Image 1 (cartoon, helix red, strand yellow):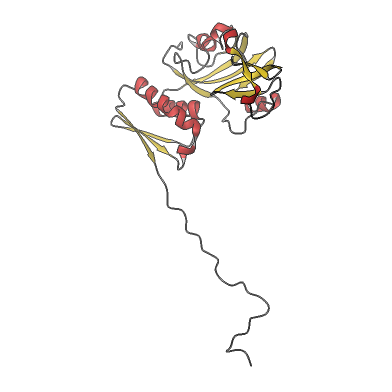
Image 2: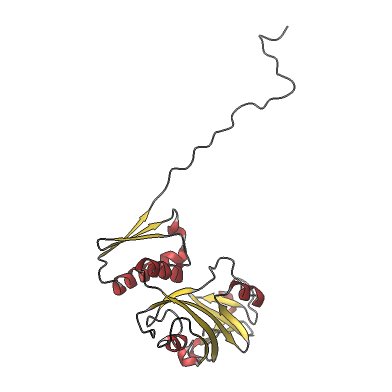
Length: 243
């Protein structure tokens, strides 16, 4: 059956620009191309078609395809990362940088990330456009399977947004409960995206009336403190042993 908007799928893909790979779900390919991220979870990703979990040009290509389909598609800028906007290129005083700016340096100014494209006197020219803005991209893909189980779908959304695979999920009587690992509040990516996750759960699953996030702290295992005096070849003398 042809895939349509609202379907969850598991997808393998690799994105290229001018034969240079910039994104892939293949761990070995990422290592070969020098873009491997040791903190990333590689392998097929779970996405919902029609929700723009992937760039529009690739998503449009997948809708109407069958499970198991493989292919390649060219994605123009308007369906990729947008056109290059000259208004997003600004001149910034070098005094705003912690270190001397150089061409090609990635920096953050007022919460926005950009790339230094030139340094003129005491000012740096910074491009805040996405690095792939204005470029036509090529994606190769394989539709691995359709995901029907709501729990597996939500697990896929959690991994998509936070990269985490250690959150347990149960759905009972209209309540979706997420079992959170200890100290997850220190995970910045999770804290940023959890609101989006909750919103999408309510949007995609009308029968779910409440989302409960439960953080559990197990009692740590007791360890035996080593207070014993280590044995030595010579025992210290005491008043009772002294002659």
